[in-house]
Each structure stands twice: as structure tokens, then as C-alpha cells.
Image 1 (cartoon, rainbow, N blue to C red):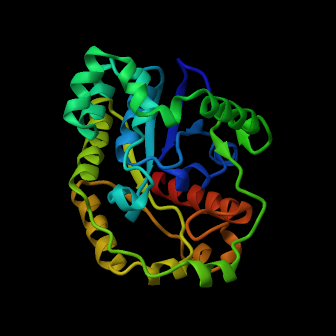
Image 2 (tube, rainbow, N blue to C red):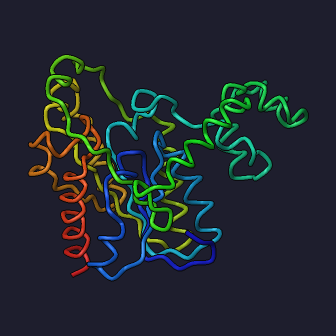
Length: 277
């Protein structure tokens, strides 16, 4: 992926977006040019910054934003609701600074402004030499057929979801809600697309159907999410039932296997081409 390029579309979201689609397959069939900007653990605040950075260097027609219970309630959906350490080197960039201040403690904001190295002291876990070396090795590990840097396509693991693991380890979960801060950054994404004349379309990547029975208020919250998106005039691409009923399409309850990625990619192609017909 290079700067100064023209793209027909990008995929934006968390790891559920990152590993959901084979971008090269989408491009070859639709004759479009796209890239996957999905990042593991990324909520709407991360998505907003990633998109803002991307469109400052590239031209873009359409954003496909992955939405689900987890992105609307990032405190429960992800290990961290926002990946502060990833953006510390960009503290002096106004857009990044605004978001960091929103998630950071006020006292730290003052200290970080005037004593820059304290930013990294607090997150020494992420910036110590051993962690940096580990990350470099992780990057090296990506230099394989598992990740294509030109399209952002991440190949799923070569395994299938073990139902014994599901039956043993997956329990009834807490309620998911629509959190104000997550909604705030969804609105920022909407506004960013509007200002830059970019079409914004949402989609939901498949989830293994049995996980839904363990999420106490899922039906109610998902109904609220879809009504919210409808009221914001955001199309939602969601037609995953045939994929979700087979555990072989997943590596865990929320991430697709090689087979699942292939099925969902063809499903996604059908949905986006139907919309444009």
C-alpha cells in the first residue's frame, strides 16, 4: 500500500473486519481497488484516526465499516476501548491529540504536553526494548503468505473452531449496551466521510450462531443499533445466516476460518454489487 493512491473502497473495523475478507478476490471480481484497514482490537475511535490518516494521503470513494455489539460497547468488546500507546508518537498532531485527551486522564494530558518522555514512561510495558523486539519479530512473521501488505488481507489460521472448546469455555456473558463515547466516534466517522464526500456503508461480519444465545440482551441491543444506523441513513449489509450455522466456518466464535472467509467474501461481493445495481 502506497500513499497518493486512488481507492474505490476501504474496509474499516476490528479484527473481525481484518480477517473477514479476501480483498484481492473482491477486487478481481468487482474490478475495484480496495484495501483492508481493519486492526485487531480497534473500536470506532481507532477507526476514526486510521481513516483520517488514510484520506490525508489517498483518495477514496467508499468506506465499508464493520459494526457489531463489540464496537458499540468497546469497554466490554475489546481488551482496551482505545489503543492509547499506538498513537503516542503522534501526540502533537491535532486530531490525534484530541482523541488521546478524550481517553486519557487530565493530569497526564498536562504532563505529556510539557514532559514528552512521560508518555512512554506510563506505557513502558509497550515501549521497553524487549516489547519492541517482540513487535519487530511479529512484523517479520507477517512477511509470509498469511498477510498481504498491498491489500491488507489477513489469511485466517489453518484451523476449525473446536466445539468442545465452545461448550466448555464459552459462558453467558454480560449485557452489551450502546455507549456514548463509542457513538461519539461513530458520528465523527460519519462527519469525516461527509466532509470528504466519501460514501459510508456499514456491514456485520459473521459470528457463530450459538454465541448469540450467550449474550443476554443481544436481540434488543442489535435492534437498537440497526434502528440507530437507519436513522442516520447508513446502509447495513447483513446476510450471514448460512455462514453462521456451521462451526467449520470459524476459528473461534467471532472470527472466520479460511473456508468462512471465502464464503463471506463471495457473500460480501454479492451484497455490494446488488446495492450498486
